[in-house]
View (cartoon, rainbow, N blue to C red):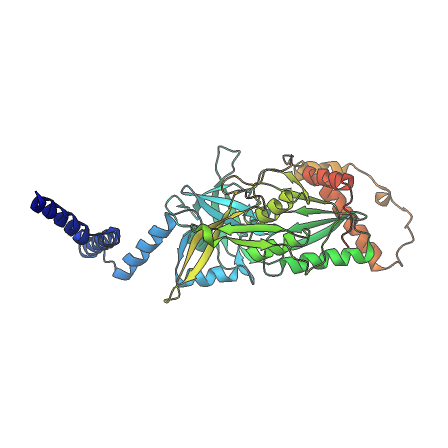
Length: 431
């Protein structure tokens, strides 16, 4: 009996000792996967109907592996990587749209303001079905970017489908130089400043703060309308510093990847003078990424009233990993969260006050209406107002006032934002 018990114990210990553990099993799984990949590589290289190099096969394999993960991860060839680096620091030729690949469909996230795409009538949410007659169905994101960009003065033809339409239309867009002008401002009324951020570039925060400081030199600042509509995002650091302009303390955003221990928080600082006037923020379906960071932080801190339509919902962080051969991998490595811990990935920021945009009358209608409006200046032999000798500054202010009046007449969301910011109670100045 003792011999049998001893023998059974020996067998058990022997089994526990020599049986492959999880690490060895995992290594075997990796080896089998690599072996299978190598077999397929050899088979394609040997028997495929057309000549194909091993480098092409490897590159395409990596590309397919990365791009199957999510719409924002991608493999960048050396040429793609150089092209991507232009976007945040200089000028490039193209039509001025941000695009993404959503469930295999090439989608316009937003047209950049005052670019050829914007002037041609492209809208956030448009599906791009063809580029120069070629279907985008199996086209990668980087391939689409390459085809749409090109030399200034050349034309690209896009077959697009507006999200509220069931009939595609072809538009021809002449490529132009896309400038990096990320901040625009305008006085809506005396004391109420309109600040439009078109993208988050390297100098966005600096330029925004300069616009506010410049306005304060000649006006008592009573409120700001911050327009983030159709802003596709950009640099995370710039989103943090823009929000920091209006928030005095606390978390602005935090990012967290697969490892919960690697959470990274971004906090408000007191290094810059905080702007404490009432604030209304405009967002829509074209407000994405960095725009949503700003809107989410201001909303969670009750620092501004968010008005408009639900934002795009891109709440992921991409890391660029350069490779030795000059290529790179753009990999989604984390999600970002608002100060209250909300992930807006695929959800977006819900405005505090939902106000759909109502399209203004067509230009033809406006021109016809203006044709039948007669003002004093249109009358023959009308008297001049005697201000010809005044400074150019007065003339400029009058032009700005007319521009603001026209913008307000055409933009119902902006009109509401102005009324709201005027009615919000003033915040007490922080000593």
